Length: 345
Ligand SMILES: [Zn+2]
Image 1 (cartoon, protein in one colour):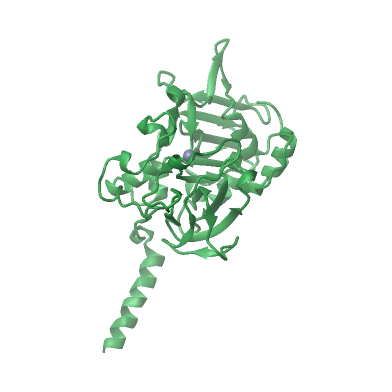
Image 2 (cartoon, protein in one colour; image 1 turned 90 degrees about the horizontal axis):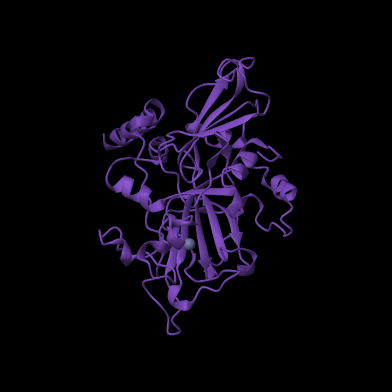
């Protein structure tokens, strides 16, 4: 009888999974370090590491540095334990199950220092988490490994290039993000940066972050259950319409962000994409020939969703010139990457 019950409940689980995605579990990320302050409900100053400025918010996500003019694309999390030499000992944990996509072992090859990128293929959209400035990578960890929620992947540190992070400011730089294009290398070559790309598609320029703390807060307050709901609630800052039949690999990888079905092929003519104020393309609507009446092939039009709203000080998304909106420096590369455009916009 007992056996029958177990089989029965298993069958129910299988059926429930197939029939009702609404029964899917809430996403439940752990904290990426042993610091319990966040889940203990303590103030952010208990876990955020400020910059040398000492301003408490300078380790948060967003336009929080240099009086709001400088962007920080993640959270800087401070250590809770140090060795005799004063170096952090905190292990760094993967926050959700995933697949290791990138390990950059040579500190001098990136501003991130030693860093790891994990893709969470079990959630939708399949977001990335990124762990940077590590002092060490967990022994044996390699690209392609499946990692468990809570698995130790490295040790907190202060590795970097360009500028040395002082010991007392050692921290984990933690990001939650999506990645833009499979074709990143061709864009990188076209831009002629004059330096090698050592990171393939996992170069920071191909990764667009959202605020991890806001995401954790949204889960905690039960405003959302998962990433799809979180993205659906993002606030649009800029609307872009583009006349192209290109279907970016971005929207193939993140189908949850597509707002409606494609029209018949002969009717499909382009896209409306909504970006949040940090240039994350979170809402995609395929458009028809009628929707894009008056557009030339590959024409891109961008405008603020609310012309009266303040755009962020640290991101140039759109600006007005001679009465028309033009595409700013922080939106242009994203559009070039998403749509394979190799021209100034
Ligand atoms: Zn940082």
